[in-house]
Length: 412
Image 1 (cartoon, rainbow, N blue to C red):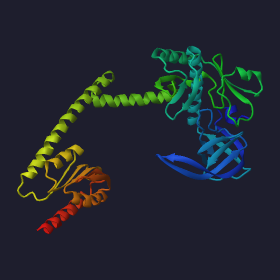
Image 2: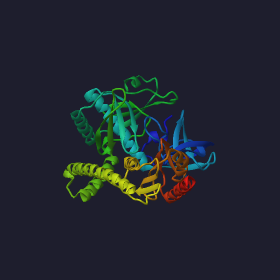
Image 3: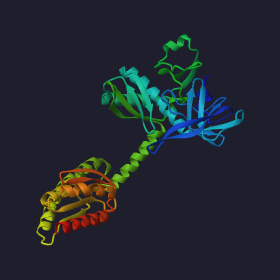
Image 4: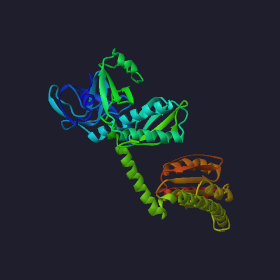
């Protein structure tokens, strides 16, 4: 059977009863970290919360006051994952997250329209599609789509939207001859019940389990953002439908106003202004690097010319890189002098270099690494790497000075 969300995609609230509630786990990713949430899978007598399928994400919503975090399909049943158990047999009030639902309806119906017209106009078949959080993608079975074709497709798509064309749902038995005339990429193995057909009048009839608008006018507008190279000689067509176009325009305008304020130029001059800035930055970076190299040589020479220099040299500089540190170490006779150099934020991450007599470097390197909470390696009298924190630099200096003092007294 079809779920209530498929019979009436516009129903926002619904009263039904709990059939079962079983312990379950939900694998999820929060801020890039994967984890498992313990909870319950709830089966309802019927549901207005769409289970994930057909390229469309699931609905979110409430069962009573309990949030539904995931809805999946298991054969003819929908499983609603919640973290609070519900009593079997109890009557419950179900409410759908309408903003999320209507967004999915717009994107999914928009995909059907684009897919049908791309096929009719250019013979480009759709092989898959993805309804993303911010933009959606249709995979077309063609190596490329020409810019003129993209423009023509967008014009015709929006012409159909302005045409106020009805979108209807038909339920057919699997042995109905009409099923053979319908566009489809096949049914899932665990499909149960009648075949559901989404019919855009005069444009397309397609098997689909998803939720859709009842008229193309409710798509408002579709924007084809462009194409990207897909896999195996295919092309990914990127699009936005409905409210996503409005949000995209709002974000773009906000960015444009910020750019006007920063660049002190009108929107039409932003690309040229940024290009000039990038060229200026590259020139300044090149000049800065050259000055840093010259400074490294002067720093080393100044140390060597100091009659009171001793056998330990240390320096921290916020600006610099590995080459800057290595130039200093190369200029100083590290066979006699222990050199400890760091670059980066004083209390943040950075780079370090320990150079000197091989025995001293081999012995002290791991200790320096531990204090700086870093990663690195060494050979031939050099030990260098990345430091997660240069905040304990003073401790490293004290440790190295003590080593040099002890080494000097032994020689005497």
